[in-house]
Length: 315
Image 1: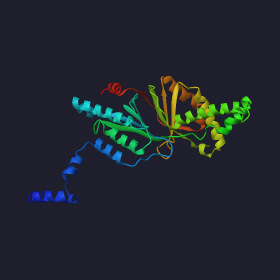
Image 2: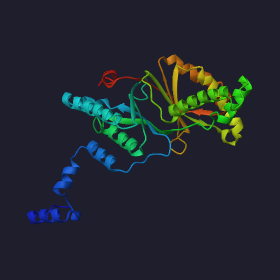
Image 3: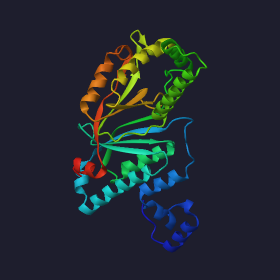
């Protein structure tokens, strides 16, 4: 369809007065050419907070670097791209209750990995959009992502159970000074345990592992058909295995039922790859895993400072 050649000035003036009739006003045009990362930042600031009743949102994001796109960029443009990504990470790390971790991924499943923990769903959503564009529209290609939330466990020891255990094992009757002292230690322990699960402070340990996990509900092994008491007993045995790796492996279990393809996300940190392999292997023999566990792919990375991360992935 051809463009009309006459009446250009009147048409432009009318479009400025009535932009809904077509064309762009100067203000609209300026917005169109603005940095999309900045626009998403503005949108995130204006959006009302979407904070859950309990826990934080957790995003695991994995990317491939499109080498042809990266190599086509000039040296100055590459430097600006890395600076933009660095500033983005710094910006989100400065937000309240928000943590950003980044990894060089060990296998060709992905080049880069990021983990975000934050209360506000808008923050998580905006971070993912801006991160994907941070180094240029076609430089980072998402290869895998996982969305979950930190959560408390329904299988934790209750106050009544701990009281009965103190009386049975140490002979302290309820109400005595010795009993109350033991319960105070229990409360302190449980408070820290709850904090570590629901509002965790993630470690800077170098070896990182992530995988999704669900409980089986077929082949005669339906986890959700078991009585609560039996499920709790099985999970208790699992916990005993986990405690063997205290100080060697940091574990965060996040819930994703209704949020992503598996029911939980499992994030592990260690100083030694052997410990990751060992804990996963040993737990496979726990009845709760042997009968009921189904696993997704395992992604392994190395947590590095950003400048070293850029060098490691050769950009």
